[in-house]
Length: 207
Ligand SMILES: Cc1cc2nc3c(=O)[nH]c(=O)nc-3n(C[C@H](O)[C@H](O)[C@H](O)COP(=O)(O)O)c2cc1C
Figure 1 (cartoon, rainbow, N blue to C red):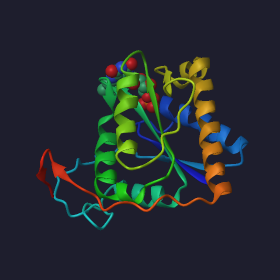
Figure 2: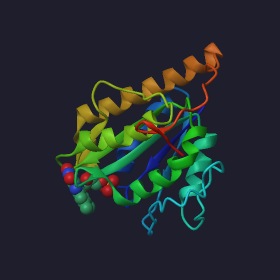
Figure 3: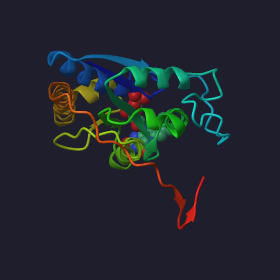
């Protein structure tokens, strides 16, 4: 069992990394391997809605981390997406990654348990947490919860480590992720057959 942890901060080892490291350590304790994948700090373009990805599960732009990210999610059993809070929302580069990763490939991620982790100095954590969870809940990905919304507070890694309730919340989320993955494996249950997708733009047939 393997969980992919995406670090959506421009800082390789900042607050988001510190939070994800706590999740990784707890997963390891429960016998689940993980990998922290940093999206880097180079420019990442946004989705241009060219629809080239439709049916392919790949973005037409192959010059950044997006397609690598899709492949890593596909081979992982579970996913954690970590973002610093920027103006009460997802950090810009990560938003570009998630839009392009999920636009088509979301149909391939069904039933992989997923969780959001956010880091902030002071405010906007729950709005950002909600925004990340939207990617999972449009993709039939079971959302792994905890005792609180997965946020830690701090502007520096040492402040994050001092947020004891936040860190405990992350450890419980990691435990719940490990438990869910093991339940799935133990049950051997396959998901129910899906209906053919109906798509309407309000009341009119959509594309
Ligand atoms: C452009 C920008 C916007 C930010 N907006 C917020 C914000 O709305 N609320 C907040 O509490 N912190 C905000 N911060 C602070 C970061 O969320 C905080 O420092 C975060 O923990 C950094 O994580 P990192 O070290 O992984 O990059 C902002 C930082 C930047 C650079």
